[in-house]
Length: 72
Image 1 (cartoon, helix red, strand yellow):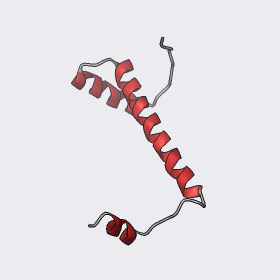
Image 2 (tube, helix red, strand yellow):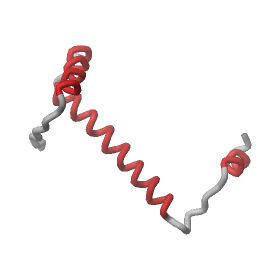
Image 3 (cartoon, one colour):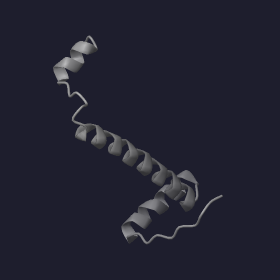
Image 4 (cartoon, rainbow, N blue to C red):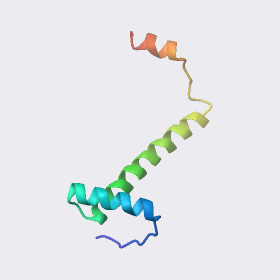
C-alpha cells in the first residue's frame, strides 16, 4: 500500500528534479521516493552514531589504536 504526500519545494529544487527526471526517464515520484529512502537511511545511521557518542560506557579509541587493531 502507498500513500500520497504533497510537498512544496523551491523553484530551483523543482528545476533540478526535472533535470534528473528527464535524464533518467523516471517519474518525479520515483526520484523523490528514492531520495527520501536514502535520506532516511542516512538519518538513521546518524542517530546510531550520535547515540554511541553519548553512551559513556562505549569506549572511545584513538586513530592510532584503530590502526594498530587493524594492523595498518
